[in-house]
Length: 324
Image (cartoon, rainbow, N blue to C red; front, side, top):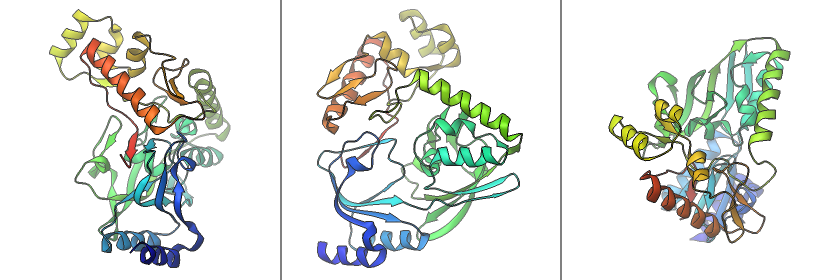
């Protein structure tokens, strides 16, 4: 059956099919074993055909964007990894229509070139526009749902337009992450505000400068490993106020920085194998160059256990798992 599937995929995308492709080559964490089939799709028609091949042959599949927010098993993935390769962008006045596969930083730069403001924060964001919307990514005061007008999705083989007002967004969450949602984001429409290009570029430069001084760059890391913790209710807030030294401003906002929690336990620099917690930002795990996915997963488990034991807080990962 494998030869048949390979032949079908090869006939569809040609040399954009890679067999036994190391996922470490496609993830920012630089870990992960081979995907049985790795396919880059550059058109909606290709996407639907790959999905049909997977369905007809009862093969597992997963969609990959920029690989900035994922970790893959050392054993790889026994299925089809579908890389979104559509990257077109169209600007019409204040309206921006962009394919899901475009890097977020490219969207921010294109908008700034024509004096459109609202997405400057994306200049510091790794990954793609589709991934940013799915996870409602955010930093430096912005979130992916801001200025979002609509998305085009692949739903049961058909392309559907979904208005942003009909979607639910939360902290690092959107409707697209719900277990019963099978929609795949193909493109998005943003409505931005006009400004002076030089002013927009200056804002971007300030954000990039702040990021360079506060977060580790130029290394194997998926960015923030854990979501900040959202306090459930007043009872929990009172418990944390009485029993911990969590800063007052965090308690008042009902959101506790995961980095602060990890740092408070003196875990910066903690190492397992060739992975360690950044000395610069406690919510970043760094691959020194030879780390395995197992090293990183063990480090994640260690952090979650220690935070739970001391604060009775269960941290949740921002990153997603492939092949585990």
